[in-house]
Image (tube, rainbow, N blue to C red):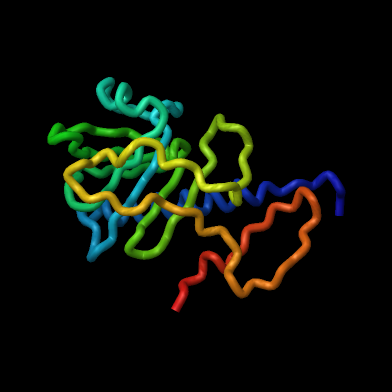
Length: 180
């Protein structure tokens, strides 16, 4: 095997999770509502390329915003590159256009699922780095705020200790398994 082969597993995993986000948002767009207690907590960079929000929202959240899709949203449209949705901010409807490349975090607390993303243009950060701040307060004051998404890539309690060599990027799949 050639020593110069380099697989960007971190990017492959991130793209797979973006596919998960695209898929669940598409399912919700098809029905217009989330089933049961499911709700999505989505953090994204407001200053990322392709994000379209009103000047008012851009002033309030110049770098990052966390939104919640639960009861009061409409016009969810999902495409290959991103999604748009209408939400209420202090009782005023606003349409957001968000490319998937702007996502920082996605969570469905009812399912115990969350994932953090590297944003295009940021420094190359490890997927297993410390939790990133969620930014400003949730954007929908009409709804209670669920806890901020947390990383799910920490090793399980009973995982055997290992000694990875310097430079290895390891993500434990045990953290993604459903706990019974």
